[in-house]
Amino acid sequence: MTLDYLPFLFSLIALFYSSVGFGGGSSYLAIMSLFITDFFEIRSTALILNICVVTIGTLGFIRHHVFNLKLFWPFLLSSIPLAYLGAQVKLSQTGFFLILGSSLIISGGFMLLRYMRAKLYSKEFTLTKKMALGGSIGLLAGVSGIGGGIFLSPVLNLLNWKDPRTVASLASVFILMNSIAGLVGLTVAGTFQLDGNLIWKLILAVLLGGGMGSYLSNRKLNLRILGGLTAILVIYVGARLVLVHGFGIAI
Image (cartoon, rainbow, N blue to C red; front, side, top):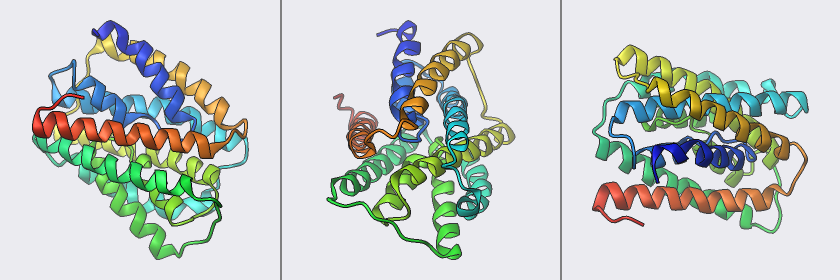
Protein backbone atom coordinates (compact mmCIF):
# COMPACT_ATOMS: atom_id res chain seq x y z
CA MET A 1 0.00 0.00 0.00
CA THR A 2 1.14 3.56 -0.72
CA LEU A 3 0.05 6.95 0.59
CA ASP A 4 -2.38 7.19 -2.35
CA TYR A 5 -4.64 4.64 -0.66
CA LEU A 6 -4.77 6.40 2.69
CA PRO A 7 -7.78 8.66 1.93
CA PHE A 8 -9.95 5.67 0.96
CA LEU A 9 -8.85 3.65 3.96
CA PHE A 10 -9.28 6.55 6.38
CA SER A 11 -12.78 7.21 5.03
CA LEU A 12 -13.78 3.65 5.97
CA ILE A 13 -12.18 4.00 9.40
CA ALA A 14 -14.02 7.28 10.01
CA LEU A 15 -17.32 5.68 9.00
CA PHE A 16 -16.86 2.74 11.34
CA TYR A 17 -15.56 4.64 14.36
CA SER A 18 -17.98 7.57 14.10
CA SER A 19 -20.92 5.17 14.22
CA VAL A 20 -20.09 4.57 17.91
CA GLY A 21 -19.01 8.13 18.75
CA PHE A 22 -15.24 7.82 18.15
CA GLY A 23 -12.93 9.74 15.83
CA GLY A 24 -10.64 6.92 14.69
CA GLY A 25 -7.43 8.50 15.96
CA SER A 26 -5.92 5.24 17.20
CA SER A 27 -6.20 3.60 13.79
CA TYR A 28 -4.97 6.71 11.97
CA LEU A 29 -1.88 6.68 14.19
CA ALA A 30 -1.27 2.98 13.65
CA ILE A 31 -1.61 3.14 9.87
CA MET A 32 0.37 6.35 9.39
CA SER A 33 3.23 4.88 11.41
CA LEU A 34 3.74 2.42 8.54
CA PHE A 35 4.20 5.12 5.89
CA ILE A 36 5.23 8.38 7.55
CA THR A 37 8.55 8.65 9.34
CA ASP A 38 7.97 12.01 11.06
CA PHE A 39 6.59 11.07 14.48
CA PHE A 40 5.25 14.56 15.24
CA GLU A 41 3.49 14.77 11.89
CA ILE A 42 1.68 11.51 12.71
CA ARG A 43 0.38 12.86 16.04
CA SER A 44 -0.63 16.23 14.60
CA THR A 45 -2.44 14.68 11.64
CA ALA A 46 -4.36 12.21 13.81
CA LEU A 47 -5.63 15.01 16.06
CA ILE A 48 -6.76 17.12 13.08
CA LEU A 49 -8.66 14.15 11.61
CA ASN A 50 -10.19 13.37 14.99
CA ILE A 51 -11.55 16.91 15.22
CA CYS A 52 -13.08 16.66 11.74
CA VAL A 53 -14.88 13.39 12.42
CA VAL A 54 -16.19 14.06 15.91
CA THR A 55 -17.37 17.57 15.03
CA ILE A 56 -19.85 15.94 12.67
CA GLY A 57 -20.76 13.35 15.29
CA THR A 58 -21.24 15.94 18.02
CA LEU A 59 -23.50 18.07 15.82
CA GLY A 60 -25.53 14.96 14.99
CA PHE A 61 -25.97 14.03 18.65
CA ILE A 62 -27.02 17.61 19.47
CA ARG A 63 -29.50 17.64 16.61
CA HIS A 64 -31.07 14.39 17.80
CA HIS A 65 -31.20 15.61 21.43
CA VAL A 66 -28.80 12.95 22.73
CA PHE A 67 -26.08 15.36 23.86
CA ASN A 68 -26.64 16.60 27.44
CA LEU A 69 -24.23 19.24 28.72
CA LYS A 70 -25.60 18.98 32.28
CA LEU A 71 -24.43 15.37 32.41
CA PHE A 72 -21.16 15.92 30.55
CA TRP A 73 -19.54 19.11 31.85
CA PRO A 74 -17.63 17.54 34.81
CA PHE A 75 -15.86 15.10 32.49
CA LEU A 76 -14.86 17.94 30.16
CA LEU A 77 -13.85 20.44 32.85
CA SER A 78 -11.18 18.15 34.28
CA SER A 79 -10.04 16.53 31.04
CA ILE A 80 -9.27 19.57 28.86
CA PRO A 81 -6.40 21.10 30.89
CA LEU A 82 -4.83 17.68 31.50
CA ALA A 83 -5.06 16.77 27.80
CA TYR A 84 -3.25 20.03 27.07
CA LEU A 85 -0.50 19.16 29.56
CA GLY A 86 -0.26 15.56 28.38
CA ALA A 87 0.28 16.66 24.79
CA GLN A 88 3.43 18.49 25.85
CA VAL A 89 5.06 15.32 27.20
CA LYS A 90 7.83 14.37 24.77
CA LEU A 91 8.10 10.59 24.44
CA SER A 92 10.27 8.49 22.18
CA GLN A 93 8.44 6.99 19.22
CA THR A 94 8.74 3.47 20.69
CA GLY A 95 7.52 4.58 24.11
CA PHE A 96 4.61 6.47 22.57
CA PHE A 97 3.33 3.51 20.56
CA LEU A 98 3.81 1.06 23.43
CA ILE A 99 1.72 3.26 25.73
CA LEU A 100 -0.92 3.74 23.06
CA GLY A 101 -1.04 0.06 22.10
CA SER A 102 -1.25 -1.20 25.69
CA SER A 103 -4.00 1.30 26.49
CA LEU A 104 -5.99 0.24 23.44
CA ILE A 105 -5.80 -3.46 24.33
CA ILE A 106 -7.13 -2.77 27.84
CA SER A 107 -9.74 -0.36 26.50
CA GLY A 108 -10.96 -2.79 23.85
CA GLY A 109 -11.14 -5.61 26.40
CA PHE A 110 -13.35 -3.52 28.70
CA MET A 111 -15.54 -2.54 25.78
CA LEU A 112 -15.95 -6.15 24.66
CA LEU A 113 -16.91 -7.27 28.17
CA ARG A 114 -19.54 -4.57 28.34
CA TYR A 115 -21.24 -5.47 25.07
CA MET A 116 -21.17 -9.21 25.84
CA ARG A 117 -23.47 -8.68 28.82
CA ALA A 118 -26.99 -9.98 28.47
CA LYS A 119 -28.54 -6.75 29.77
CA LEU A 120 -27.40 -3.16 29.54
CA TYR A 121 -28.51 -0.89 32.40
CA SER A 122 -27.40 2.49 33.68
CA LYS A 123 -26.65 4.42 36.85
CA GLU A 124 -25.49 7.90 37.89
CA PHE A 125 -22.01 9.02 39.03
CA THR A 126 -21.02 11.60 41.64
CA LEU A 127 -19.41 14.86 40.55
CA THR A 128 -16.07 13.76 42.04
CA LYS A 129 -16.13 10.47 40.14
CA LYS A 130 -16.93 12.20 36.87
CA MET A 131 -14.09 14.69 37.27
CA ALA A 132 -11.61 12.01 38.35
CA LEU A 133 -12.42 9.85 35.32
CA GLY A 134 -12.41 12.80 32.93
CA GLY A 135 -9.10 14.14 34.22
CA SER A 136 -7.21 10.85 34.24
CA ILE A 137 -8.38 9.87 30.77
CA GLY A 138 -7.79 13.41 29.49
CA LEU A 139 -4.15 13.14 30.58
CA LEU A 140 -3.80 9.77 28.86
CA ALA A 141 -5.42 11.22 25.76
CA GLY A 142 -2.92 14.06 25.61
CA VAL A 143 0.07 11.76 26.06
CA SER A 144 -1.16 9.19 23.54
CA GLY A 145 -2.08 11.74 20.88
CA ILE A 146 -5.76 10.87 20.48
CA GLY A 147 -8.98 12.37 21.83
CA GLY A 148 -9.48 9.82 24.61
CA GLY A 149 -13.05 8.82 23.89
CA ILE A 150 -11.87 5.35 23.01
CA PHE A 151 -10.62 5.05 26.61
CA LEU A 152 -13.53 6.83 28.29
CA SER A 153 -16.38 5.05 26.54
CA PRO A 154 -15.43 1.46 27.54
CA VAL A 155 -14.88 2.51 31.16
CA LEU A 156 -18.27 4.25 31.34
CA ASN A 157 -19.98 1.34 29.64
CA LEU A 158 -18.34 -1.18 31.95
CA LEU A 159 -19.33 0.88 35.00
CA ASN A 160 -22.89 1.13 33.61
CA TRP A 161 -23.03 4.92 33.34
CA LYS A 162 -26.11 5.71 31.26
CA ASP A 163 -27.09 3.98 28.01
CA PRO A 164 -24.64 3.25 25.15
CA ARG A 165 -25.97 6.06 22.93
CA THR A 166 -25.53 8.68 25.68
CA VAL A 167 -22.01 7.37 26.30
CA ALA A 168 -21.28 7.60 22.56
CA SER A 169 -22.40 11.23 22.49
CA LEU A 170 -20.15 12.06 25.46
CA ALA A 171 -17.24 10.24 23.81
CA SER A 172 -17.72 12.35 20.68
CA VAL A 173 -17.59 15.73 22.43
CA PHE A 174 -14.87 14.47 24.81
CA ILE A 175 -12.68 13.63 21.81
CA LEU A 176 -13.45 16.99 20.19
CA MET A 177 -12.49 19.08 23.22
CA ASN A 178 -9.40 17.05 24.12
CA SER A 179 -8.16 16.90 20.52
CA ILE A 180 -8.32 20.69 20.34
CA ALA A 181 -6.51 20.94 23.69
CA GLY A 182 -3.94 18.42 22.44
CA LEU A 183 -3.29 20.46 19.29
CA VAL A 184 -2.72 23.58 21.38
CA GLY A 185 -0.33 21.60 23.57
CA LEU A 186 1.62 20.34 20.55
CA THR A 187 1.82 23.88 19.17
CA VAL A 188 3.11 25.29 22.47
CA ALA A 189 5.65 22.46 22.70
CA GLY A 190 6.81 23.18 19.14
CA THR A 191 5.93 19.70 17.88
CA PHE A 192 2.94 20.50 15.64
CA GLN A 193 3.79 19.43 12.07
CA LEU A 194 1.69 18.65 8.98
CA ASP A 195 2.18 17.65 5.35
CA GLY A 196 0.17 20.32 3.53
CA ASN A 197 -0.40 18.19 0.44
CA LEU A 198 -1.61 15.10 2.30
CA ILE A 199 -3.68 16.59 5.09
CA TRP A 200 -6.40 18.05 2.84
CA LYS A 201 -6.97 14.74 1.08
CA LEU A 202 -7.31 12.99 4.42
CA ILE A 203 -9.63 15.66 5.82
CA LEU A 204 -12.02 15.33 2.87
CA ALA A 205 -11.94 11.54 3.21
CA VAL A 206 -12.75 11.43 6.92
CA LEU A 207 -15.45 14.09 6.57
CA LEU A 208 -17.20 11.85 4.06
CA GLY A 209 -16.82 8.72 6.17
CA GLY A 210 -17.61 10.51 9.42
CA GLY A 211 -20.79 11.99 7.97
CA MET A 212 -22.01 8.56 6.92
CA GLY A 213 -21.10 7.01 10.27
CA SER A 214 -22.86 9.74 12.21
CA TYR A 215 -25.99 9.21 10.13
CA LEU A 216 -25.94 5.48 10.89
CA SER A 217 -25.36 6.13 14.59
CA ASN A 218 -28.47 8.27 14.85
CA ARG A 219 -30.67 5.79 13.00
CA LYS A 220 -30.88 3.85 16.29
CA LEU A 221 -29.03 0.81 14.98
CA ASN A 222 -28.01 -2.05 17.25
CA LEU A 223 -25.14 -0.42 19.14
CA ARG A 224 -24.35 -3.71 20.87
CA ILE A 225 -23.19 -5.17 17.55
CA LEU A 226 -21.38 -1.99 16.48
CA GLY A 227 -19.72 -1.71 19.89
CA GLY A 228 -18.59 -5.34 19.85
CA LEU A 229 -17.07 -5.02 16.38
CA THR A 230 -15.35 -1.78 17.35
CA ALA A 231 -13.92 -3.45 20.46
CA ILE A 232 -12.38 -6.22 18.36
CA LEU A 233 -10.85 -3.65 16.00
CA VAL A 234 -9.45 -1.64 18.93
CA ILE A 235 -7.82 -4.75 20.43
CA TYR A 236 -6.28 -5.67 17.07
CA VAL A 237 -4.88 -2.17 16.53
CA GLY A 238 -3.44 -2.12 20.06
CA ALA A 239 -1.87 -5.58 19.74
CA ARG A 240 -0.35 -4.66 16.40
CA LEU A 241 1.23 -1.49 17.80
CA VAL A 242 2.75 -3.36 20.75
CA LEU A 243 4.08 -6.22 18.64
CA VAL A 244 5.47 -4.04 15.84
CA HIS A 245 7.02 -1.29 17.95
CA GLY A 246 7.87 -3.36 21.01
CA PHE A 247 9.03 -6.65 19.52
CA GLY A 248 9.45 -6.00 15.80
CA ILE A 249 6.75 -8.55 14.93
CA ALA A 250 4.32 -7.58 12.15
CA ILE A 251 0.77 -8.97 12.09
